[in-house]
Each structure stands twice: as structure tokens, then as C-alpha cells.
Image 1 (cartoon, rainbow, N blue to C red):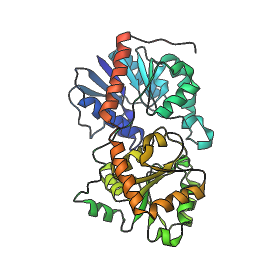
Image 2 (cartoon, helix red, strand yellow):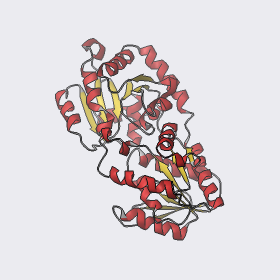
Image 3 (cartoon, helix red, strand yellow):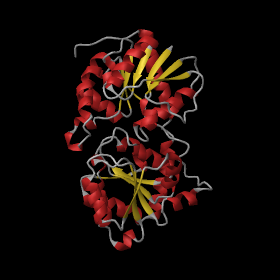
Image 4 (cartoon, helix red, strand yellow):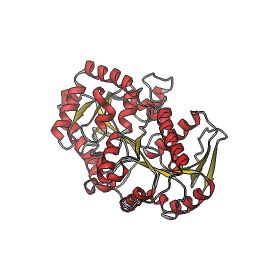
Length: 371
């Protein structure tokens, strides 16, 4: 079977969807079989370590032209396709196709999604008619997909993100140098993710700044992540409380793993996530987690994490106070997180994706429904 994969995010997106695509490719490489994988992208993921079954094919196009041109090329060269970055790819495809569904942030105007989200809202209904299968990254996302588009109920499976061996509680020889390089010479509460409205950073900063001095002591709030969009409120909060907050920007995974395991806790107060990879990364690192009691976060954290209402500054502050003042609780959450993280496995998820694609190819399913 020749499988065409939209692998554009592997080289272009540092975190989130990019990480999922990179680890999916690694997971597929660990599976036995003689399938051939054609990886379509605008640029090759240079750090990839894949075997001869994987071939990169670059398509030089931008905007909407990229998924349309790539879909045409996939139709001519493969038996089945996986769309990862654009539902518009289903428009030109003439082979069975599965689409990865990440989340529905684009459909919730309260989250102030970026301008490109309009295309996502317009093209997902088209994909519902044209794709043979959907792969949601969480049960939460699957439920929302099926609620919004009932026609997908018999066509949707779940392939969670998994754990990465780099995110571990075991210290490395270069940890001290990594921490020094980023100026992390104080105890800190960690926040990771792109700086954008749904990460809810102004409320989190307000909650942290309002902690009693004896609770906070010399602990600082550390923000790790690239600058996204509509960041005015976030940077205003940073400016107001600059003595309590360090914004480090994007940090590569190899160093991010160190930053996770030496944090007192991760506080991830996102208003909405399709999965919430930082929660899983922190648990893998043995770091206690305080996260939002909404969307997919409880699905990821289970009983290992502590929760707060992301819209309630006082409740966020309560959760911070609880974990910062109780070292035994932090230790118990850290140990429980390590155990829970082992249930999320990239190879298993790659197996689900491969089985979905194989099933489509075997049935030769390419039908445009009227729903």
C-alpha cells in the first residue's frame, strides 16, 4: 500500500501539531510492514530518522494552493491519503482519505482564533462529505466532532498523542547548564504553549501575582512558548508583574525536557485544548500539574492532576497555593503523573492511524455524502 501523508507541519510547526506529526512518523517507522509512505511537505524535516519506506516529496506552493496542488499529486501517486494540516486537501483528492481533527477552537469565536481559522470553518463541512474517516486526537475532540457533524459517528477513531522518552524525571548531566543558560536560578512555576488568547495567561499571571508573599516566597512564573497572536493583554500583564514573571520564548524539546523536570509544578490554565500535550509532558517529567477542569484536560490528567476553573482567578490562585505549600502533594502528583503518562503511547497511536488508512484502502472508500 502506498500511503500519502500531509507532513508539512513536521518541519514548519515547532510544537503542537508539528510535534504530533513528527512523532506519528516516528511511530509508523517503528511498525512492521512493507507499506510505502510518501511524505508531502513544503520543506523536508531535516532531523527525521526514517527508513527507506519513507520518501519526501516537496511541493512549492503557498496558501490554499498548497493543499489543492498536493491533493492532486497524492491522487496520482498513492492508494490512500492522510490530511493533517488542511481540510481543503479533500477537495482535489480522488483516493480514499482520512483527516486528523485537532480541535474546534476555530469554531468558538470567544477563543479569538487567528484569521486563517475561517478557512477551517468553511472546509471541515466539505471534508465531512468527502473523507472516508476521521482521526481525533482525544475523546473530547471526537465527541465534539460527532455533535457538530453527526455523519462522522461511524467514521471516527481516536489516536492520542503519546509520551516522548526525552520528557523524563531522570536528571541529565547538562541540566544545570541548561537552567543557567535560561536564567532559571530560582524555584519556578512553569507555563508552556504559544502565547495566544486561549492560553488564558492574563488570568494566570493575576492569580500568581496575588499569592501571599509567604506562599510564593522566591518562586517565579516562567512562560515558555513562541509569541502567537493578539498578545496585547498578555504583554500588558507581563509588564505589570515583570518582577514575578520570566518569558523565555520558544525552547527546543531537548532543553524543554530539563525545564519541565526542574519546575515545582506546571500550571496550564488553557480555556480550550484538543488534547493538551504540555499536561502529558509535565506528567512524563514527574512534575505536578495544575490544569483547567474543561475540555480535554481532565482526559489527559485523570486523577494525577489537580484542577481549577480557568475563568476564576481566585480558583486558579487556590490551586497554586495548594500545590506550592504542600510538597508531599506535589510529590504524589508527580509520581501519579509518571504512571498515568505511560498509558499514552505514540506507537499504539500510529497503529490506529495505519489501521484506519489500511481499512480505507481495502474498502476503496471514496464517497461524497449529501449530509
